[in-house]
Length: 114
Image (tube, rainbow, N blue to C red; front, side, top):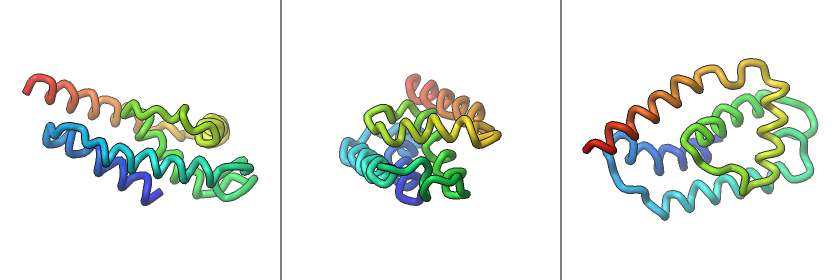
């Protein structure tokens, strides 16, 4: 989770908070983090095996943030499969996403007018 959220912050926060241009090298680091998660999920139903654990709760919160920011997770089939599965079994997984969507939309709108 730390690797994922760190890559998110490095890539998106400068854009949202400072209107900085997208950095392709930082985007590549996000892709690398997702490739790692995709490999890690290979042959497993959940992050720590075939049983739902607190790790899934943590990772779904982070992956949801990427999805809200329009990062395409469909390039990672194991992540996509897992993400769809946890949405069905983790109650309230999406709480707070509306606030994040609004914040991102607001920042993008502000930056578009600068």
